[in-house]
Length: 435
Ligand code: NAP
Ligand code: HSE
Image (cartoon, rainbow, N blue to C red; front, side, top):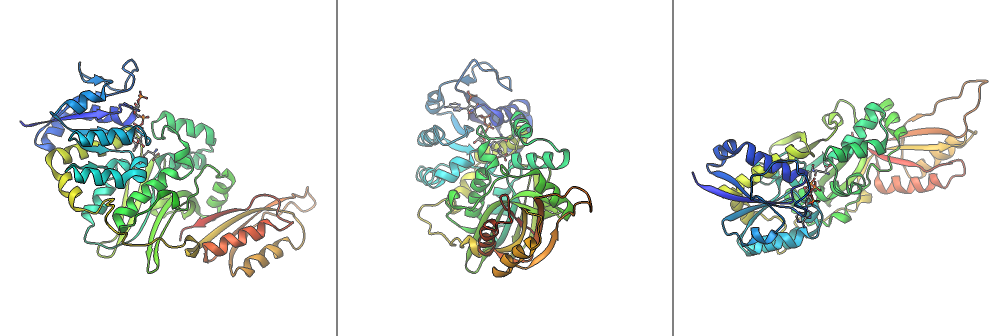
């Protein structure tokens, strides 16, 4: 049987999982690839560190040069996180004639155009299925399976760590700090979990999907984003009472005047598919003009789901499928003018949830309603629990307002004006509501 020699660079959570698939299930991968997928080298920084996988003698090395100099190694899984040295390593591997598989979305979102252009110039390929939504094959689906469609909308939960945190806080009353630590222990979180919880990771993945689905050249840092790091457990409780769950939702909506992109904690109605996505699962709902709505659901973070996507890319690369699609599709092409422009986020329309802390005095509600009316925002419902008659008066009191449709610009301006009212005593919380 023919043999493809493979190397892994970076033997952390994902790299160890890929090594396990290649070593423990070589018969399976050989059957699916029609060739032996042979792990020849695994590059680490520290040879003395204990690893999550047992490697045959001679595979582990701390010398990247050994891989670069080995012409028998043709495909490399580059599984180091962050920007540098990952970018430089990827460029030197491409220069030395290797095809690359990666899970590093931060690197692609930041330097994708440079890396993809250089790979094309050199006649090499970069496969990146694992970079978005872990084990869900969303890259192949958008760029190949749905290629006859104009995608109009894409909405998803793209960060497993955030979804795990919110689920555990919501369902088990867990503390935010404890669940962040648990997400790190389980291998879901980035080495710097700030990128998971502040919306950066989801925005980087959304930028990659927007590129594939809409031909949008997006600087991920321009995507309006809010993470779950500031989420108050009180809002999870109010959302439940109102029949919603809060999810970190990444959205891309195509309209006549451009593409709207955002990442934000959003109230999603209980019973709808996205609301039921729990723990480290991810989900993406895509609407194509021919296919209609399609829903993808699966584990978006963690060792083996991510390794599953990387190993599939290794096989696709070894058999030549990646090169076919990589050379022809307009992934991150510098020469390609963007097919759509980004819409001004303030023009996007939706419903809103406001939670305020207000003085328990006559006229307070009227003054807040007046501000919303000035901004042409109509109130759909209000929750304010009354104190017991004759019992101790609560002051300040929480006030929750659900609105009808408004633009983001109107909602922002109303937030500022409400915040300035003397009767409003704490920061105004404003969240999007998905219909
Ligand atoms: P990780 O556990 O931190 O592993 C990264 C590995 O890279 C570490 O083992 C580290 O070595 C190694 N490394 C760093 N610099 C190196 C260098 N110069 N030479 C050789 N090795 C080096 O991270 P991970 O969770 O596996 O994630 C890897 C990539 O996959 C990241 O880009 C991440 O965003 C992406 N990803 C992760 C998941 C997930 O669920 N974990 C899912 C999808 C995508 P040491 O062991 O010596 O520190
Ligand atoms: N840290 C990422 C997440 C890993 O939690 O979704 C998968 O990309």
